[in-house]
Image (cartoon, rainbow, N blue to C red; front, side, top):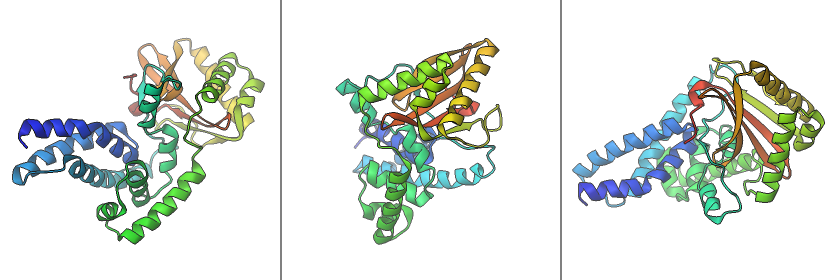
Length: 295
């Protein structure tokens, strides 16, 4: 395989590599950096000894680098001000969930709700679950990556599977239901209708804000439909009184969300997670380092 063929092979697997790294570390910017570094290591390794299976080689390299980065990040997050939320991937156009082509795109997207749940796993559990459940890597190969026996990795996967199942709403998205609930949620919030907003929320809904200590945000999660509704309406009222902010609809990790801009600057993302006809989570990202203009 010459250099041009190697580059083409890498570009074919690059989107998958970014998804692997993003699912493990929870930061799309870091995932891009990990994959860029993987290309340099691949070129060096290929010069020493030809790499036959570029996809497999790169998946191993990216997974190992992601594990190391996640362990370092976990230590940094221990001193993070307030809750830490994953970095969202924002796109300008909403995905049409009724369109089969867009459903394929959504299926290939690591959902924001899943990323939040993955934060509750240990690094070993997380990489095991991501590689095996999302990307189909066999247990023996995962065992080599995490430095455990295949039997131990199976136990890690079992624990991770149970925690993901417990913490995450079902990931299958019914397009009609999702659109209807999201529309009612947005309309009630924009209209300041407390009763209507409460009606869209699960009784045990949790709202989490991430300001990173740089902008105002709740330092603890807000729980319960009434409290979350009042909290959201308070945010909407404050935004209206500022007078220089506008809201629009975007897609975050493939599903509809609310973006707030002050001029050209994205200041806030409100990301609802919908399951069984109700909003079960509301994640509010305000940390400037995690807010990027739609792609």
